[in-house]
Image (cartoon, rainbow, N blue to C red; front, side, top):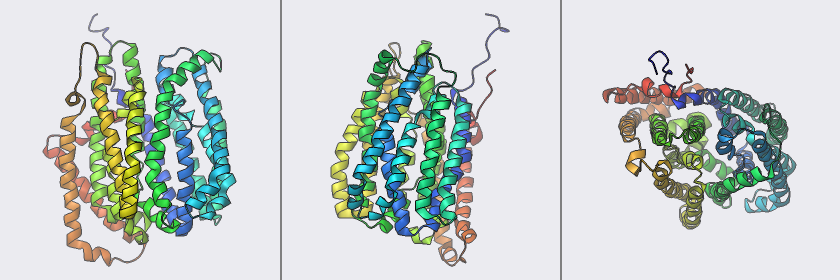
Length: 505
C-alpha cells in the first residue's frame, strides 16, 4: 500500500464519547440544582420524604430491567438486524414497569411504616406511575449509544435531563411543594416512555420479536441482571438501614452527606459505554489484543479527573456543604468525606469491560460477595456507630466488590498470544502523577482553613458570602493541582485531549 493511500490514523476511541460528555456537562448544572433548590424550599421532614420516595423508585428502576436493556451494548454492535434486540428490550422493561407500579402500590404502606413516615402514602399513585414509566423508558439513550449514534444520544440526554430538572424544581418554587413535584415527574416519565419507543426503533430493521434471539439476549443478560438484583439493594442498603432508625429530618442530613456531584456519571458512564462498544468492534475485527490499551487509556484519563475531584471534595467538605446546602447541613460533613471514596473507586471502568467480554458471571459474583458482607457490616455499623457506621459499611463493601472485579479484568482482556497480569492493565504512571498533585493541592486547603477560619465563620449572611470560601478553596486547589502536574512534566489539557470529540478523517 502506498503512502498516499494509507488510511489516516483513527482518532482515539474516547473522542467518540465527547458528545455524551458535553451533553451531560451542560445538563449537570441543571441536575445538580435539584437537591440544592429543594433543600432550601422544602421543610427538613419533607426533604427527607423526597429522598425516600426517590430511593424506592431508583431501587426498582435499576433492579427490574434485569440487564436486558444493557445487553444492547453487547448485541447491537455485532448485529445486522437490530430491531429484534431493541423490541425485546422495550417490551421487557415495559412489563417490568408494570411490576414496579404494582409493588409500589401494594407495599408502600409497609415501607412507610418501616421508615416511620406516613407522609409517603400521600404520593403513592404518582410514585407508582413515575416508576413504571421511567423504567419503561430505560433503553432510550442506550439504544442510540450502542449503535454508535453518540451525537443523537447526547441530544436525548440533553433534552431529557433539562426537562426533568425543570419539572422537579419549578413546582416547589411556585408553591406546589412536594405533591406538585411528584405529579409533574410522573407526567415527564410518561412522555419519556413514548419517546423511547419512537426514537429507539427508528431506522432499525428486522421483526420486533424473535424468540430465538430473545433467548440468547436473556441468557446473556441474566447474570448481569441477577447481579443488579443484588447490587442495587446492596448499594442502597445503608440508606434503608439509616432511614429505618432516624426521623425523616435526620435522614435528610444523611442523604446530604451521601450527595455526589454528577461528575462521575458525567465522565465514567459515557466513557464506559464507548469502551464497551470499542471492545466489541476489536473482537469482531480480530484485534482484541488492543483492548488493554483502550482500557488503560480510559482509566488513565479518568484518573486525571477523579483523583483531584475526590481530593478537593474531601479537603473542602465544610465549604462545599455550607455553600451548596446551607449551614444547617454542616453536621453531614463527616459522612460526606467518607462518601467521596466512591469517586476514587470509579477510576477503572471494570464492569463495562467485563460486560463487553461477556463475563457477566464475574460481575454477579462480586455483587453476591458485596451483598453477603454488607449485612453484618450494616448490623454492626448502624447499631453501634449510627449514621457514620452506615456510610462506612457501604465504603468497605464497595472496596471488596471493586477488588473482585479488578482481579478478573486481566483475564477478560487477555488473548492466546498475550496473557495479561494485574500490573499490565492499571495505568500506574497516570495514577501516581494525579495522586501526588491532588494530595499536595488538597493539603493547601487545610492550611488555608487553619489560617482564615475565624474570618470565614464571621462572614455576612447571604448566598454569595457562603460561596466565597468555596470559590477561594477551589481556585487554590486548581492552581496547586495544575502546578503539581506541570512539575511532573504533565500537560493537563493534553492529558485530557482524547475526551474531546474529534472528526474522523
